[in-house]
Image (tube, rainbow, N blue to C red; front, side, top):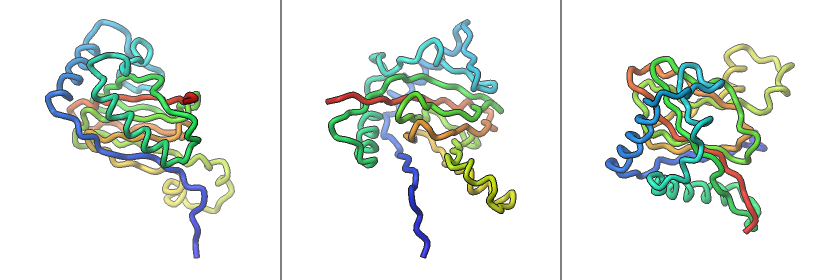
Length: 197
């Protein structure tokens, strides 16, 4: 018998966001990306990010309904992880990323926080999924794995669809696949900390 011990739990759920409201948010973000300011980020390969100039989307009134929906999912995930009920999670930073044809995000972590997440506002066909890297990578250096089994062991691809919210431990290394669509991929990313009740 095989026991799969110490699994890593991530949260994946499709949010029920009203179409007209979502279009309002999309217009707000797309208009911001049209501004004549530097929205390049070191992790982005061709994409744009508001992280360095506007990472407080959760504080903007237009985003409150979306934030409320995301916060419900954060609480569900928090409870699933069996964290101390004397502590409550809160969104610390929230920003937007845009990826056009062949744009992607490099490997990185959000290790200054406890949890991180992403919500996909626009996700075209062939938009590029999110990929997670096994945190036990250094323990496998001497495993007799061939190239196919090594890649399968070290990386897990989460299939993305529009309106999906994915929340995960911030220490998990992750990246995005390139967007091979002619339409843009637009997402809201966020970091989560906690405080005493």
